[in-house]
Amino acid sequence: MQVHTVGDGTPEVAVVGAVHGDEPCGARAIQRFLETEPDVDRPAKLIVANERALERGVRYVDTDLNRCLPGDPESDQYEERLAAELMTEVQDCLALGIHSTVSYDRPFANVAYLNERKRDAVAHLPVDAVVDFTVVADGRSVELPGFVDIEAGHQGSAAAADNAYDCLVAFLRATDVLPGEPPAPDPDFYEVTDPVYKEPGRAYRFLGENFERVPAGEPFATVDGDDLTADEEFCPVLMSSDGHDVLLGYRSTHRGRLSTLPVPGDDAESMADGATDD
Image (tube, rainbow, N blue to C red; front, top):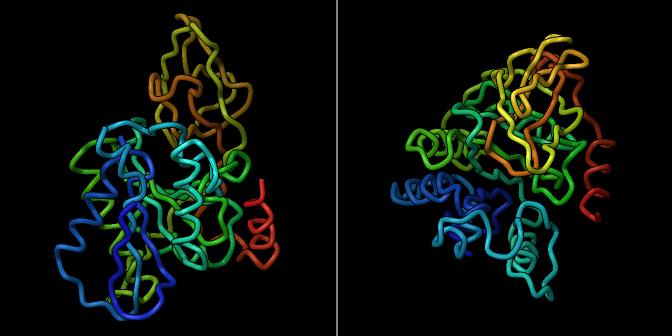
């Protein structure tokens, strides 16, 4: 794991890239930012997490780093040990995790157990949407009290690296690391309700568009050529025909613009504190 610190003092802000080794956009954005030799107003950490997987161009070496937090320093599995190291590095930090996907080419933010800190951070990212993954957040960085993630765009693309860099800069401006005003796009907010799993050995084809409403009674995918029909209205998130062996993606509900949501209080943060013990 590479840990770069800019500025003087103890950082309370962090950016984390390459949690998955086949998603290089975060590492590229961090390298690009460091090459600018930034003049910062407060310190920050920039972390390239899973170097081994990044060098091999694979999602992980032993197990998915973003499914095993908070990790185990005594584990036989590399990513479980790495997860514990990462937790130490980001402790007490407000952190931005950078990912990419095969299902959608524009950047969007992911949260869980939304609290005021997370809301303030995602409100200033150049994204069209914020997705609440609380119901499926087990072991993921987004369930930590100070963590928000982005999906920067299509995995491996130059556009994803550019989007990741723009989000990194906006995040550092929003947290007063960099001077300048961050954007305030007021993105749409979606709440994941449940995952859609694939049955082994069957061929799936996603018919819709992510974040586009699927009315009740309409097909949104085919399974071995037969229609898979929506029982009730939903908005697909991270759905793709072949992006994941087990998951087709997620169903979500559109809750309106982020600015229209009630401001989360201490209850959300206390829930997130408890969630990290799972």
